[in-house]
Image (cartoon, rainbow, N blue to C red; front, side, top):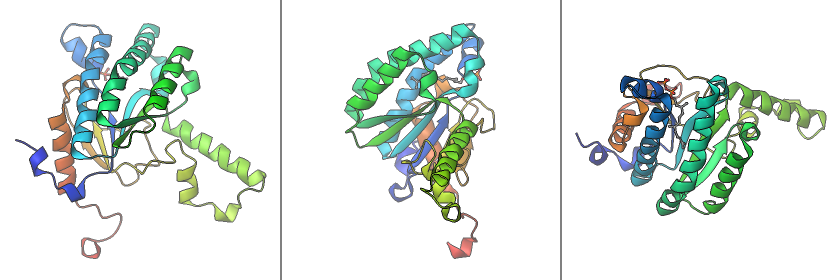
Length: 245
Ligand code: FPP
């Protein structure tokens, strides 16, 4: 089925977050090394990016490396970092052609220096693009993000820059790594698992969740359009009743 033609333009999710899961299992199924799965996952990243731009999704956030992923075998971590550097260097052309602005969330200081440099360069080169903001969650953990936000807020209160009585939900949003990004409307997770895995916990309070069994390297833009189509069939009530909407 062609889902793209069935999408209603006025109900597009503004922000889609993705958990790209299943690279390792997909490669293993083919009798290959896990890293082959990650390498093959780059094609799916391109599909997701181009698909998002094609239909007018303004924010796309990809979980590329979690803070827990540092505990993987050293060789896999090293290979993932190299893949990131090589991909960014190569894909900057795709970012420019599609008007994509690169952004990151997470503890980048934990990344090897040359990765940090490649990221900074790609961010600088794409800073004036305005079709879509592509955020890579790298060395990212949502609980760590909440701890950092809490520390920043407490510091402001101690310094008298913020009154305790003025602290509200908006204050917390504004101190997260995602301060300038709207909350995700839709979360897509490939690979058959149905969990959130320490991803954007505060931001996903009202996000619609969409899980599919496909492994990430097989994900393509038609899957993205199907997910958006399914999202558009749902009624988002934000705690209200149907009649109140
Ligand atoms: C999860 O699959 C995937 C990752 C930890 C890495 C995702 C990285 C990419 C798709 C490659 C490049 C990305 C960018 C942005 C350049 P898994 O290894 O946990 O799979 P498994 O559950 O089958 O083991």
